[in-house]
Image (cartoon, rainbow, N blue to C red; front, side):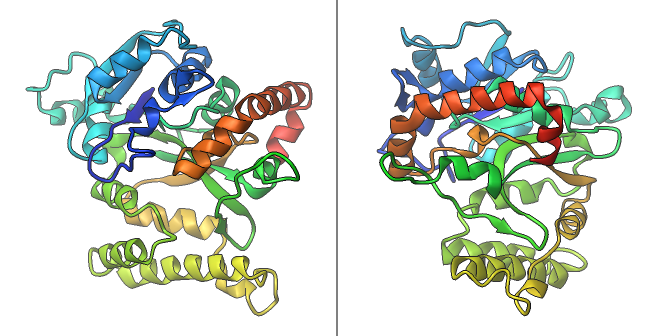
Length: 326
């Protein structure tokens, strides 16, 4: 398991602080994430990439829920998000040393090694959600699995009368409405165009026109079929605007929306890998701390939302079919 917890370049501080250090229920956010990871049956070693001095201070919190049940490795952050996740992965390899060229692993079994990646600012992550995601990843068929959560699942966290809530934007596809949930299962050596990962992260706030235009510019002319990617990208944004104004389900509007399988096919081409999307019946990993408002709402609802996910886990254990249909 590799957790990205850096605070350089495209990372955005909240309330002037690295998001992973903000207190939630009396403990830093990163300690809640680590607690979920160490309790997940599918995890072994844990690698966290960030400011190691800050991470050590967070782990020393007297109220930290992390108990150290899994070997923990703190790695000093690099300049970019891509460098962080790439170097984090390299450190999981046997006999790896910084002076060792990673190309030596391409002719070894590690060439097909998959690693689980997640962000460090999702304190509502649960071991059940991590396990559900990993269980749905068939590494014999695909090389990159992106976790998503449906709008139906996330309604439980919407604003209601009384307590505040969070209602985020979705990918409005023809057959489903989903949002990324910050879980990734990846075979890094099988990723052909890895440089796009950094660009997607750098311009990930797609409600801002600057980021839309910059990411669009990155897609144009970089490889064969770039106009096809740009066209699909613009259709995704058109579908977002249609949904915003309640027009998504109109007959004339539906052809603008792309089907989920088409998105997977296009991303497979763009990244030069076998890409697919995995949906999970939980919402905790989707509720990251993007801004001060989300942070305040998450703090106000933390106990209730965590209890909701625990109850959902019990229900899904008794009725596994519900997990497949969520």
